Length: 456
Image (cartoon, rainbow, N blue to C red):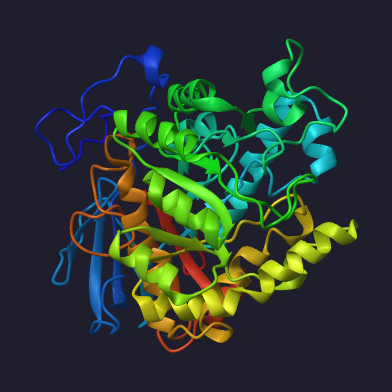
């Protein structure tokens, strides 16, 4: 049993999910998590995140931030009792590709605002994500480790976060937002572009700079590393067909991450870039919508490489520049085919949303989850597994850098983290109910704490 007083990142040696103590200078001061009274949820049918079917009516006891027991439980004296009324209890949803730093700001606001504004905006967006039912996210660019520490104390509402810190890009790559007339970072002794100053991107060229950039993000609390290995939609200089970073540079990133026991994820759409990333030892392909054939997905399946992808529709992003708009169209046109090939090939799929730079569309996170079933051919139980236990398996690949490794995520089993949603309706028949979280999520519990309870 996990003590309420034990800091998240310093579990005593010998406990489940053994974690050596790491000096604060190397990892940052660790937050002491909250304690909450037990919660007994009665008369619920459970989707455990692992199986397609619901359980018979049962009770679930939450204690000391964990799922303590399922079925036949007695009510502790100090417990909060939730009468489920036959509703369905599911694990909290997860999102494998978020941008807390950028989902609540336009590009102009992100680069022109005072430095602290990004962090306050991220705090607000974290609460919104939690109230949409997303209890864990993997953040794929942005200085969100300080936010993770604050949220883990329970002082503010928000999901668990797996930070990548700054995404790492070559000059002219997807993360290069300098002006075209400015010298490349490698040639300049002056100030870095604003995207780098706020910790959103890091431009690095050549093996030595890539090694330094990866180590910098690990120093700042990254649980995994993100590199840009191909052209992007929102970036100004790189067509979608280009390959970014040489094989040696990508291998340098993988080697530096492996020394810290974690992995590298690569932003890349095109087929050639995917193969180069696999050759370099990349673990997770972010996007992959322009893959050219099932053979590439079969290779990913054979070599254990994940496809962390997003159910985009063209209207999810708007671009005034016709070049960016055309790139967006091409990517969205490839979504259905890449999903179909990945399922056929047996490739591990992670669900994410990648919403950013358009604050008015942040709530589409919920809608995008429902598309897995209603637009892209997944059954409702399969979609739920993707967004719960299967995403969690990808998150776990960060190994010793995983701040939540002391207990399982994304499932409702004894000993798992107590991140659960009590929903109205039948989520294993239709995920559409998640499109209206304010109405259909009756109870939201994360880390054993009740953040929403419409049944009180």
